[in-house]
Amino acid sequence: MNIAFQCVMIAGVLPYLINGISKFGLKGFDPHAPRTSMEQQVGWRKRAHWAHLNAFESFPFFAAAVVIAHLQAARTDLVTVVSVAFVVLRVLHAVFYIADWAHMRTLAWVSSLGCVFGLFLISL
Image (tube, rainbow, N blue to C red; front, side, top):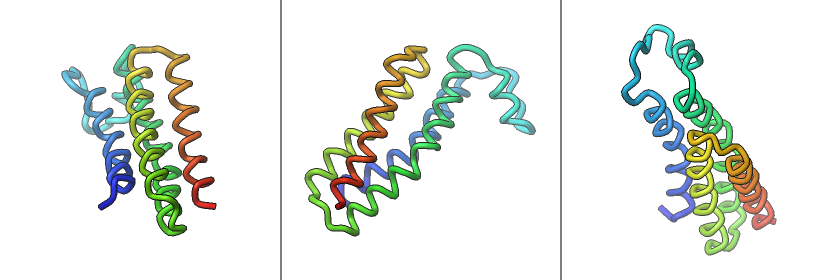
């Protein structure tokens, strides 16, 4: 499996890891209504939950871009660099979200979206 495909796997697992962070040591979690329980959280737990949701939202577009780049036989070295950058930026996005650093979070989000567009451009 090439590095870009490994990045797809990491990006696919990332939302679950973030979700685990949001629930770590959580008291009063209702497994019968998990979404309600998480939306009632405050502070860093709620932001971690939102980061978890955002990670799911970004994943399909990235995965499609990597697959399309592969199908178009785009330069592997470029696809690798951009894919790794995407994963790093998404991890930073989650860290910044949980830390409540809104401007840095936005910068990481915009940059990760730029990586996805870059993958599509590399595929032309």
